Amino acid sequence: MEKHFGERLIIIDALMREREDEWSIINVTPEEIIQKVIDGKQKLGSGRTRLVIDSISALFLDKPAMARKISYQMKRILAKWHFTTIVTSQYAITTSQAFGFGVEHVADGIIRFRRVVKEGRLVKYVLIEKMRQTDHDRYVWELEIVKGKGLVILKRLEERKEDF
Image 1 (tube, one colour):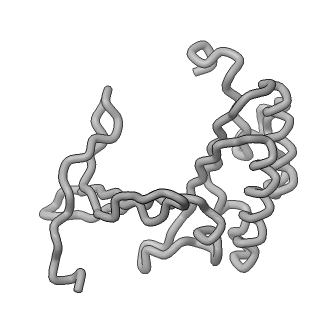
Image 2 (cartoon, one colour):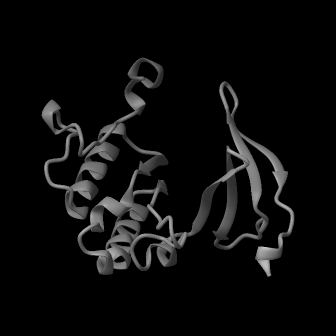
Image 3 (spheres, one colour):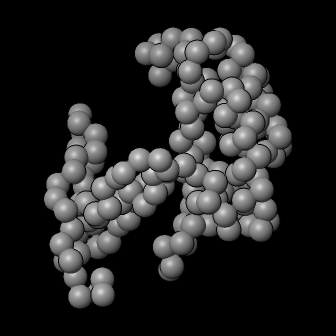
């Protein structure tokens, strides 16, 4: 991967502690992650930078009531550094609600992926639930992940009796 991206990609990982490199995280705390991200930004230099956090839920697994505070703190600090941030978050399979109270209130946009087994086949869907300061599509769309293409939108989900 590094050959493709050269010096423009830094992977900060809490699961790779045994590597003991400068980008490994010892303690999974918001403060340590923020500091590592800022260190990475300083190494990459000026300009806009994309940041992916997978998964922010790991920061409050043992304290879900802190989700809003932690998410807001990270958003406020990282915005000053001109990051475009994509964050994944777990959600409860039983309720389809976000894991941790308040993460959705802090996010500027929410794109939710869902899945269901129909007639023995896994079917995947996408829905843009929220996109601040812009009008957006409000329908559920069936999608497929196609090798060599990525996400391919197949069709809009029709109304069902369960929707009412």
